[in-house]
Each structure stands twice: as structure tokens, then as C-alpha cells.
Image 1 (cartoon, one colour):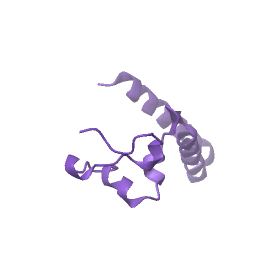
Image 2 (cartoon, rainbow, N blue to C red; image 1 turned 90 degrees about the horizontal axis):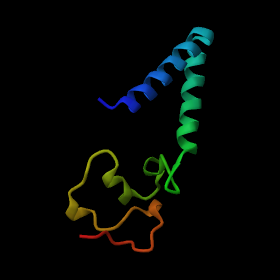
Image 3 (cartoon, one colour; image 1 turned 45 degrees about the horizontal axis):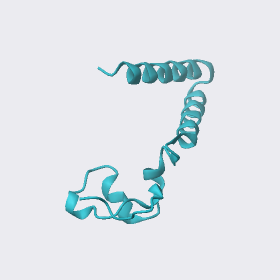
Length: 89
């Protein structure tokens, strides 16, 4: 349904297939490492794209994989670097 997303996945998949054809398992690993490095370097609105995944603060993990109930999410994550630390109601 999302054409841009499917074309991006298709491109990454074809590049990994080409890397596997050239170098086998090493090619797949190198391709995945290059993809991961690219994702780490991406920034969106001045915040790292993978910032929620690499936090040291345990309170920021409440909202990463499963959405916690709103009543438990009173403060913004530390990686946001905003002036107001309290979320709006």
C-alpha cells in the first residue's frame, strides 16, 4: 500500500541479493552493517533516527516497542532535548 516504503525495501533487498551473489554470507553481513550504519547516521528534525533504541534511561523504554498507557507517560524522553520536560495532557 505505501509505494515509497515498498520501493525502498525492494532496493535494499536487491542490493543485499547482489552482495550475497558476490561475497556469499560475508556479503550479506557487510550489506547489513552498511545499512545499519546508514540508519545510525540519519537524523530527523535534529534527532537521531535510532535515538529511541540506544537510550540509557529505562523510563524512555516504556514507549519503544509497545505503547504504554497514557497515564504512565508523564515526561518526554530525554533524547528529545526540549525545554518543557512534561508532556501535554
